[in-house]
Length: 485
Image (cartoon, rainbow, N blue to C red; front, side, top):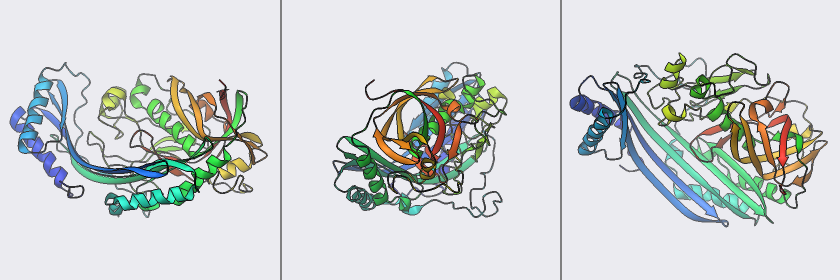
């Protein structure tokens, strides 16, 4: 198959064939679930302000999970011929027969329809909002990605630049022996680039379901403005600082909250900070997992998870109150709950994680001048910076590591620009800082001084998640070191 001849229905037909093979080889007493996934990914990478790599791949993979005689095993293949599929079934069955007893097997997802998606006819909750699979993004050619790279490099005005522009399309299908059968598709585009000036770096990132939304010139100008403004930084002593975190930094908060905080497996094991029904966050904080897209974006992911559970929006925090955690079928069975559609190939081992968190933006009025110029400060952060008396503007966080999962104390570093803000004005660049901070405590009641008026969709650095992040104005952030130690 080529990149684009995996047509609607192909995955379901392939999945149904495998289910029939399971019944033929293992008998009707064997429970089985099949995931068929076709991915077409293309990447244009640049360094030293020139494209040095353009790659594309298209693969079709099949994953099979069997449960028979109280034992479970899984297998996968990219060989979709009759012989390849039969070999997959036979070796997975052989592995199941010698596996230990699986006392936590939750059973298969029953037949259930997909939730109506945003803008879908008949959807009362989301009617009128944009939704759909962007064919132009799925079929984007190298010239379209290269054009955005050229615009980024040109907008940097001679600074050294590096980064990537990527596109991805996924078509998938699911079937199990309980009768569940679903299919869907999704597309994504992302751009991530840095500019460097005299050893100082600036960054700009953006993700979208549409390549057309990525403007390389806007991103390049912002990265360059940050790099130029970050030269010759001063050092500040450790201590508690008021901060405005730009969306790139906020995405790290959302990622860690998703992985270590709202994980239903960790919550059931009492290894998470989450306490359902308790006001753990400032009343301004609402966090939603939106795999089907939201008010500003088409679908962010497939409309079903790896166990065939239909996905829908899940409110994890509403007005400061923790309202839900994420579950696959295994964690839900243990907790006496229902799956929230967060099964993944690793969720039984590592827990079910939200991958499309959005921190709801907060409209602001009377926010004063646009401090620091249009490119240096993110739009979502500008009104927050303008009303800060003295504190830090932080672009990005990285190398963050969990010190205590129960309280979600994180240590990490800033990068790509930190500035001192005094009376609403950026007054000096600051060298990179180490921090040690409980993320839930930073967002606790009374600690959130403001949330930016717009949300930016950002790609996860190491995976396929996306986070919708506004800027955040926080009362305190615990800086424990600077560039000298």
